[in-house]
Length: 231
Image (cartoon, rainbow, N blue to C red; front, side):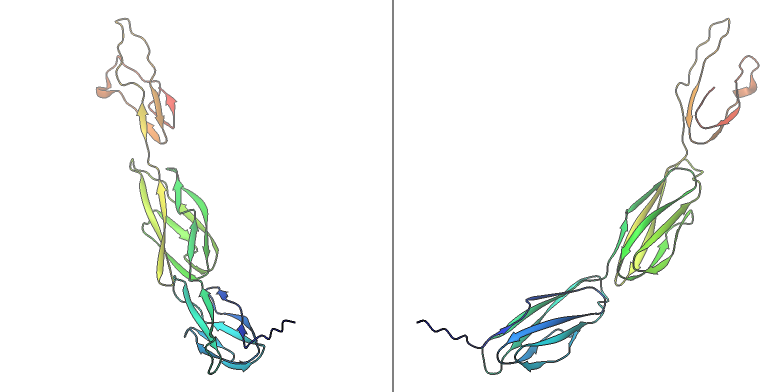
């Protein structure tokens, strides 16, 4: 007959995972001996630091003020015995994730929405006056409204919305197309008896046209318009 007698032991969870905010979890200890906490991170508190036999400890982590996650160890041991048990403790950092990271607009004025996924208090700043983003500050997840004015120039423009949270920043890029105007052909040859040619204009803007030097032998079907047209 084999007789097996178990020795002294300390058993518990090997990992504890916390969110970035202050949070409490229970650590259940299974043991048949006296035990004590030998070491623990300074950013958490324990409801007790010693005991005997089976027991439960409340583990309270403080709010993590940084964007980086943090980890530490709770070491449980028995007096006079070489039998330590290590619990690995992990806590998330603050985060802010915009979806998407780039907001694109046509040349016209307009408004678009995007999401901010966050577990932090945040503020925002726009780099230019031709667009704005609201709300400018908040906490946690949010829907952000971005409005742009019409781009009256022929140069595409780009700006940034900078979000500050904890010890970090995240940037959302706002871009807007410019005005453009293209003509399919710029040279016409007429026969001596006269005639008609068509000019195809492609544009996203208002346009005007005039005969240079106002010569009487050349006329246009229109002198102004908006958008694509044939002249």
